[in-house]
Amino acid sequence: MEEKSFKKYIILWLSQSVSGLGSSMTGFALVLWAYGQSHSAMPVSLMSFCNYVPYVLLSLFAGDFIDRHKKKTIMLVSDSIAAAGSLAVLAFQFAGCLEVWNICAINAVVGITNAFQQPASAVATGRLVPNEMISNVGGMNSFSNNLIVVFSPMLAAFLFAAGGLPLILLIDLASFVFAFCVLLFFITIPEQAQDKTHSSPFAGIAEGFEFLKKEKGIFYIMFTIALINFCSRLTYENILSPMILLRSSGDSIVLGTVNACMGVGGIAGGIIVSVKKESRHKAVAIYVSAALSFLFGDLMMAVGKNVFWCSAGAVAASLPIPFIMANQNTILYRKIPAAMQGRVFAVRNAIQYSTIPAGIILGGWLADYVFEPFMSSGNRLVGMLEIIVGDSAGSGMAAMFLCTGICGFTVSLVSCFNQEIRKLN
Image (cartoon, rainbow, N blue to C red; front, side, top):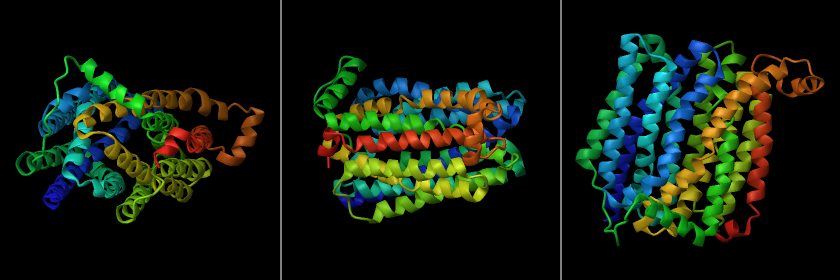
């Protein structure tokens, strides 16, 4: 029975990966399009910001709904609404009236659907995969996600040059149809009867937090990862693309190469996690991995003045990430009762991702209005920083990577010594 369920998960994993490739190409193409309109980091930040804010807010209320309804139905409806967003972008593009605010509004709707889709998918994984294989599944997901990171920029850059944004959007919609049909006709997700129904979404939120009050170690993991996410979102998901484009005179091939190398590192990490034995010190492994990612990844991004060093930094930053994800998921699936996983996963998402919108919008503002102008100010400190990050366009953003590398490394290292977290080993 377990083997049959895992085979179903493999089918689901492959089909969702195909759909993820289409979505990732669209995301990369929209970054190129938005940056081409203003040559500023702020529009890219706003697009991500509008996606994450509704996602975080709705995540708190989604958990109880997910636990009480069919996971398959939630995934199908959520994916359909997200696909409608891509269709709307395509319609605006054909009408010749696509603007950044259109994309921001559509991203907000997609963020709402993700608040339901991602926890439902996480619960479905727990229903399909045997407990002893959860850690391996984390590696598989990292492998597929980062394989997408490798190929989507190259494919998107080629297709963007060949047929523009509409061609990429059409491919995205075709990949959605494929994944939708696979989930609808070939995947059965076991459902577990609920002990009771909840009078309101707030009751589900309360139960999720009540569980975390008893499991303080899990709560501290969520809180500290929220801090780590804040540090990383100040730069990677936010200003990395504008910085690379500035330092390479707008060369999208260089940007694609760096993004691809980030995927290569993630693939390598995912393969290692998939085949290696489960760590005996799972909680510590989370923070050692995060510390290494900041120490080597961010600092190499800061000092990297060419595509080689930025690519090396991308590999160093992404290789440890699968170890963070796999070890956290293993702890959660084994500590959270199956009947309330939706509530706790939704609360987890709300806590861990609550800092991302602030990091995204603050990072864009700091890049455009603080660090870049400061590096052109002639201040005495600027001369010292230029020795490390250089004096070309984008050096202000490179200085931000220097700051996040130090801060992220410190937060990760300090978290290793929290007693409640260490108990989870």
